[in-house]
Length: 438
Image 1: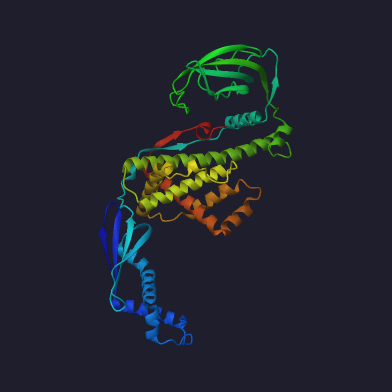
Image 2: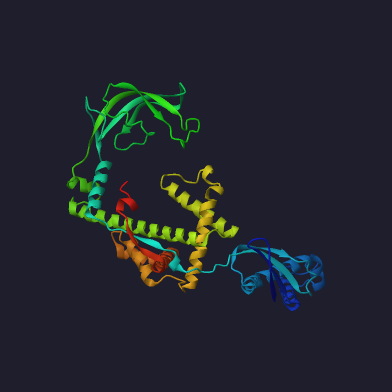
């Protein structure tokens, strides 16, 4: 078999494959035999049709079948001989072949992954992020949990301010005219959780139930309603009620709300700390990985990637988006989120990062994750379960799960390797900065 490669536009290549006549004849003979055994022609018993009659009726089908057989049996070896790192599925094109007694030639139109020359990792100068979970972080999380269980009590004469919620009626005008979405009744706003346009909530503070007044605000320049972006507006406000926030006590009943059947507060704190530590470890891993990727992309600059690779990354990002939405009860991606162009820029970035990781791993002879990193991921996942040892056994039995674990472990180990070479010291971040307390 002869294989030659021709460079086309960008990363496109054409591989020409020529199979010797002897192999073509052998493939034709095998296809002929297959058709002869199955041929049904009036006047002849099955399997006893003369060769010339079979060829007369099925000659072109036999030839096509032999060509398909030749391609299937040689395509992998042909790509291997080309020396190309092929992305996606090749497109097959046939030459004008003269029949069973001649050399058989076909073409593969492919995209070849770009060749990447690994640069010194020491040039990256990345700050490794570190973080320690503190008792103050746990205490703050408890306050967040208290707020999740809070109740509101209307108080006559109470002014709207810290720790309160007001229910208001409002009517908005811009250029002297009311606008769509600018009117509401009994609308709830919280003084400590301001989700309104800048200046709106602040101008209501200090008022109490029964107050009527007008405020003036300016819509942000990037406001989603383009007709209002950057414009001044006024709102007529009526305060209907002001309620005081009431938080539950941190006691046994509170602990039971969060699954601690014994009501032991120390047990609650221990479980919270364990959960928060897992979140922090995951956030640290993600942040350090992102920093490594950003540094690599800056070091290597923009380089061309295959369309097949980009399409695969687009589908991956769509799947991630769909999975995130399923958690909120949406069964499938809305049509507006199915457009490839929404994901293309991120997909190109992902594909470049993937190629750089592969090139660095090959240079470092880090082709697969070590048992240590695999065990680390499994142990971390198991710590969230009541029976961690049983979870470990089950996940190690599942081939697909272990493939995912191995892929994550490989990336973690590679990021650590890159940081060991390209780190320029450490910098600290708090739990809130990395995770937040929501």
